[in-house]
Amino acid sequence: MKRKALRLDTRLIHVGEPEPRIAGAVSMPVFQSATFEALGRTDYHDLGYIRLNNTPNHIQLHAKLADAEGTEAALVTSSGMAAITTTLLSVLTAGDHLLAQDCLYGGTHNFITEDLMDVGIDYDFIDGSDPASWPDRLRPATRAIYVETMTNPLLGVADHTALVDFAQTHGLLTIIDNTLATPINFRPHEHGYDIVVHSGTKYLNGHSDIVAGAVMGAHDVIAQAKRKLDHLGGCLDPHACFLLQRGLKTLGLRVRAQNRNALAIAEALAAHPSVIQVNYAGLPSHPHHDRAATLFDGCGGLLSFEVAGGVCTADAFIDRLRLPVRAPSLGGVESLVTRPAATSHAGMTTQDRQRLGIGDGLIRIAVGIEDTDDLVADFEQALNA
Image (cartoon, rainbow, N blue to C red; front, side, top):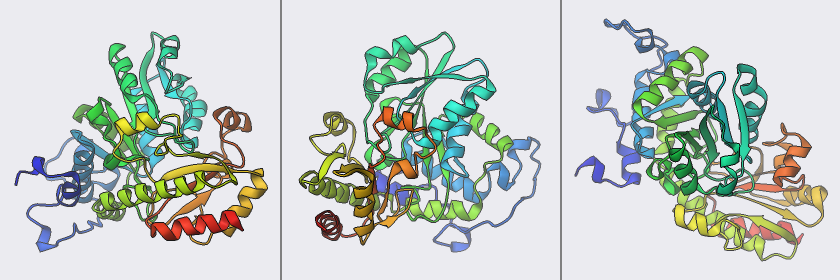
């Protein structure tokens, strides 16, 4: 059976595995060597060295990641933020201008607002759901648009079709963070996006035991990003590559379970009188539900909501939960619960959070793969207590 005819779940297991298998090992071995024989290589960026992201573990993992997102090439990094910062610094230079979605992950928002200006790169924020407002933000120096598939923690869905059309009309590079959706639910390259970035820490790995990032795109774009990453030093160690490659093999099983659990929890929360609002694009009440239903194969494992009573009630509710762990991050097999104002978006000013609708009492749930009925029962008992 031809590889290209295989479905994604099958390819996640088999694509990128060594052929023939190394010493007969079914799992890709860990090449725990910092350096490798030069064997006539003369280009610095091609030398076999961990910091240059080209050990056997890197090479096999790159093939699997590129196949998952349907791109020509991929590159792993030491963290999701390393993937984001390396990508932006490799495609933008001093004097350039970036358009960025106005509700981004806190670390990305801070890098754009605090660090890009230091190297002479300017920016403007845009509303991803308001195409009519985008032309007013364009400048002669505008080079790229940066968005997220779904926003964290309010789960807004940008008008991705309009964004790609707008970028192509004006000759702009499109960059999308697909961490929350994963290629199981949405494949940006199929919709015309140029570069896809991920926090591999989250769903791609899925076990809350490594920090990693990934960039996927055309060969020339990834080669440019690799040269920048080689200089910045944000490499992923071989053992983390091994763990990420292992995690990718169960991505489909995990994400579909998380889709199912998140929708069940969102429906239960929406029906409870103590809950003011639930943010989950899988609910018909979400303002971007129709758009999500058209674009996505599932709405993911992240949701947020507010309860009557503000911060004190929110903290009391979290304390009553028995299954979710009170911890930041997302995408693991275990459910996690936080208040974004105190964790993922704590680095933003109160004014910025309020402008984006991230209240201090907002609760974010990163749903795991526990039994659906057990999770729903736990949320209901915490609300009823």
